[in-house]
Image 1 (cartoon, each protein chain N blue to C red):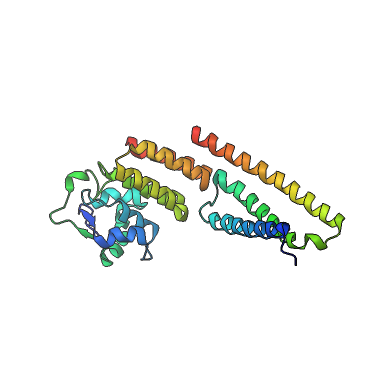
Image 2 (cartoon, each protein chain N blue to C red):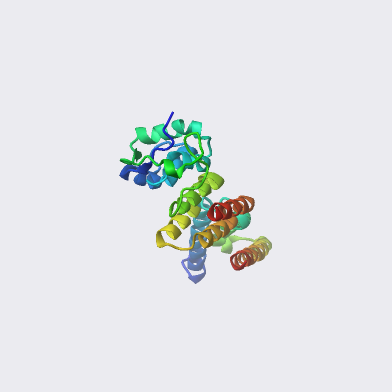
Length: 99
Length: 163
């Protein structure tokens, strides 16, 4: 495997996503429910999906273009959902704290 | 049966146990350990602990047995528990209102009460307004524990504070 900038960035992304996965699961024990708890379960599922999706990054160069486009589209789609959930969660927290 | 007019205080081991949870105490025993204040008659804690005064003996015994609480010398406090067969349902006075709130949080949120209890303890230690602390704790619970339990806690906390 060639150690170019793309590969290094890919491994970096996988590493960070694994840290995210560890944190999102660890924090679950402190968030049993409530406004945050409801969104948290969705976020765990999304981070698991991302972590799985990011695992293919080191193999990008060996994949057929169509497969690659499908995977990238899925990552972008779930990324958009993740952002939506995060924004709604932050809005819920702000609304609760300002009530 | 326990003398419900006797006054008990936490020992050093009792203070440590609140944080350490080393003994396998029931919720009632733990609540009693938290609210007991060295000033109020034992009977006055029955309602907070969630039992009738006659059941206090079984809640009390393990705490004494483990050396977590001890009777206060000369502390029999009949004036604080009027009109009861040996105790009362009213709240202990003064700073123990914060402890009553902590016991309430333990009862309502059960095993998830930790962060709420910490918040209340912090407020009690800094001398902050109890109602504000209870409202803040309820918000925390609404965000991270359970929305309906948080509402119940706030209603009961307001009732406790205004009593």
